[in-house]
Image (cartoon, rainbow, N blue to C red):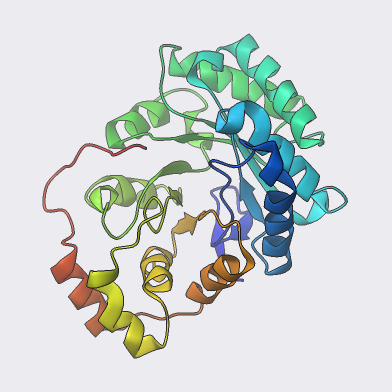
Length: 276
């Protein structure tokens, strides 16, 4: 498994597992937990979740999936913006830890910006680090100006990552956000790295044929081509997991990348950050 370096020197898998939409249907929870465990077996040991997903249901699924395997896992969760006050974070974190059946998070993110001042949220994260409840903190859905504001605040330089929407069709972060984070050695964590359940097959089919791969794998390989990006696709079936893992071994050629640039042009100006 290729790894990505966090600012504190920690190495994490470049390819992890997302859990959005998991934990919403009790009838599917056992299958979802099995899929996550199969992903761990394939080396995708970074698992991302959030208190928002299934209103805690996804965290419960993850807790079941990693039972007995916690030491293998780099565990990420996210807090709602309305829980981002100093005391609110402490309470939200305790609830997440209980659902995840663990005593600490490897990374805790602010899911998106809300009304709580960033300085107070940073203080809340620092309290949790000092208490050993989390090992590091980061943010999600922060655009370049949000990141500059964060970095300007006391303690903001400790931000480990920023999780945003990034895929072959959503390349806006390449214009300013990715360069700004690269300058500070802060990797980007890409959610929905192959789109939201829909791969643009028409634009990827010929490249996939050259590699003996699927359009899905090519789309994921496009995101994984960067050494400063962590991809967290969701998969609920073994075949899908194996397809994700295979994408990590695909090396796109200059010809492939030129074709992708022609079909999915990189940004030439600032684009507002997309969210889903």
